[in-house]
Picture (cartoon, helix red, strand yellow):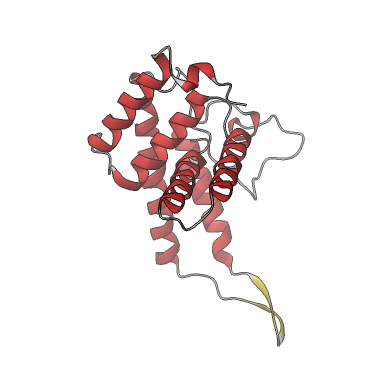
Length: 193
């Protein structure tokens, strides 16, 4: 998954674009360092508006910030390992990365609409509108069925798999391969956008 562009960067506007801003490959160590820089930058306290006026909050304790940085850096490691496995398994093309895991949420939203219809908590029209809206959001967040699939798989695995590459991953790998190769697959017959 491509990291966000770090805020508070020390690069001047006239400097050459960094890997994070040029849209290319981002080295995992650069990503980890950028995330740490952003989290440390947010540790200085915040200016807030309260009924009593404008005040500045106290900085977070260094141990709390360090723990948050460690957690984010572990997550970055998990993401890069899943992406490497997805490249090896043909889910991602070489030198590609997951751009968004929003597909995971949109897939679940679509399923909730169908369950709501099955439980008679909504009308067929309301369920269809919810599924259509999820599809429109998917088209804004992803470039293709393959891109959508990679985002869905990564989101699902980050949620459930704990880097076991077990059933949570293998079931989606199998579904991905079928949907990307079966001549009757909607992914091969219905344009993504």
